[in-house]
Image (cartoon, rainbow, N blue to C red; front, side, top):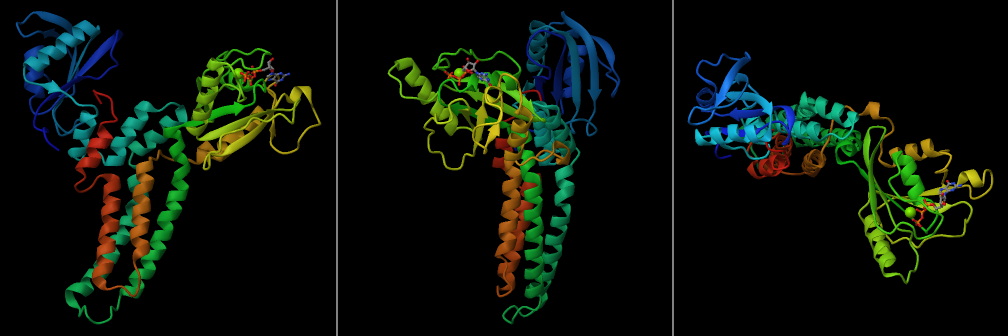
Amino acid sequence: MSGAADTIVALATPAGVGGIGVIRLSGPGALALAERIAGAGLPARRATHRRLRAVAGEVIDDGIVLAFPGPHSYTGEDVVELQGHGSPVLLQALIDTALHWGARMARPGEFTERAFLHGRMDLAQAEAVADLIHAQTATAARLARSSLDGALAREVEPVAGEIRNLRVLIEAEIDFGETDLESAVAPEVAQRAAALATSVEALMARLRPARVYSTGLRLALVGAPNVGKSSLMNRLADAEVAIVTERPGTTRDLLRASIAIDGIPVELIDTAGLRHSEDEVERIGIERARSAAAGADLILEIRDLTRPRVRAELPDLPGIPVLQVWNKQDLCPGDGPRDGLRVSAVSGEGLDALRAAIRAEAGIADAGQQRFSVRTRHLEGLAAVATCLRRIHPGHSPDLIAEDLRLAERALDGLLGRGDHEELLGAIFAGFCIGK
Ligand SMILES: Nc1nc2c(ncn2[C@@H]2O[C@H](COP(=O)(O)OP(=O)(O)OP(=O)(O)O)[C@@H](O)[C@H]2O)c(=O)[nH]1
Ligand SMILES: [Mg+2]
């Protein structure tokens, strides 16, 4: 990746007014540049109180300066933090001064990208930094924190070891043997490769559910008018997000609320009741309800126990699970249909069962079982490893087997960012914020 030799600068704290604001510099020129702003003689890893000066020498602010000479810094390069008062104007003046002295603005995630490029962390750990910052629940933060400690690398290390062993076996035969004769080791290699594929698939199955903690779940509440969709949304969100009236057709637009269900970030979407309508505004709302359902991870189809025969015509959406939820249980205790969940948005009964059903739909039995955060990319990488291993057949030539093992190894390396993966890096670090 280009540009690692220049010195970058960015605001590390959120934009806006705050108690303090931190500007971070990284690169070969960071120390010299910081000394032009804060005065000479910055000690390593010790906070000093300094006046921070503009290009012509006038004082912009005073604050704490911390220098971390490389390689023992976040990025592995020389890093300096300037901590000033949290005034956007003063902080911008400091950044402008750093730019004048030769720094350039950091790209999103560039500090972490440099940390990765200097071997301070593997790619899964770098992703964990972003997941940690963007975590929406305490559980998501806990999982990302474990990933930051290199949990994924430890999990796949035995797989990498076995692939290496198999490569040694087959390549020794290629180097020293008669390759046109029948391979002596191919049956053993094929059998061990199949066993390894099985354990990679088991690992994927174990990791897959954890993905929901970073991606979250999008839940659409849909159904006929007046069944209590908005009431249920308000109850689950514990806030008066949506207007509720006894008039059918109350909700016309999409309404959203972010909640957490056992640590899973959930976006609830309340929608207009589905029915045939002559009203232009309501018709648009109903169209939006249908597209919200199409974009959901899970549809809660809300029914009304007092009118069991009333049912909205749901759009046909193969692949999106639908959970039937019978509402207004408080009005009909005992009677009514047996299947589906029975809840009351008014009394709150049945809501714990509803939350458990949502969690089960996400594949999560218990948040405590999840150990670290998982991205779709990791699952795809593991799937690629398993596919390469599954291709290996005892009847194949040693060359072909060696090639599949090499591809499996390459897929595994891509997981942790070993080797050459420039495009991948660009895509991953673009998702970061500036200053991280
Ligand atoms: N007794 C009882 N009444 C409920 C319950 N849930 C909703 N209601 C009532 O049912 C009526 C409709 O509720 P809403 O939440 O507005 O229903 P909706 O499905 O959002 O309706 P639209 O927005 O028109 O599609 C209101 O008078 C609510 O007070 C419930 O669990 N028990
Ligand atoms: Mg409503």
